[in-house]
Image 1 (cartoon, rainbow, N blue to C red):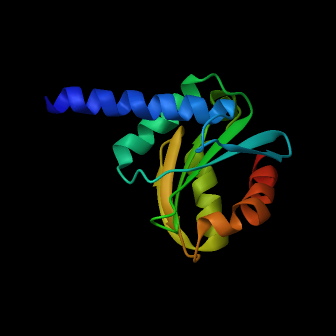
Image 2 (cartoon, rainbow, N blue to C red):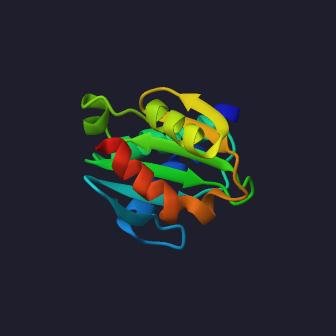
Amino acid sequence: RKLEAMLVEREKLEARLAEALKGGGSAAATKLPAGKVTVHLMSTVTEDRGQLGELADAFRGANQVGSVLVLVNPTLPAAVTIAVSDDLIGSGKDANGLMKQLTATFGGRGGGRPTFASGSLAVPSVEAITADQIVPLVAGWVG
């Protein structure tokens, strides 16, 4: 039963992400140009690292190109999760490297793997700084 419930929850998360990336629904991702890439900014209340990883995998599975997913959690104001598209990973730009850049710039801590990283920044709210400061930082990171 627990496995069934987890699979149902995963399907819901993947459907929500797919809908958000298409621009539908109330949880639609905001698409922000960041130089050579697009930042997909989306709010989530998911705190579970496994579920965040599933959202990151669903983002990458949607065949995104030149894209960075930034998930912010309004219930944990300093929490941020990042996923990057496979083409960026292939060019040497991975989520863990971007997370290290974010924590070097804003303080905090975090890390992960090439496809997905999470952490917390030393800021009052990640949502408040995203468009103004994270987007230019991503653009500079990509080069």
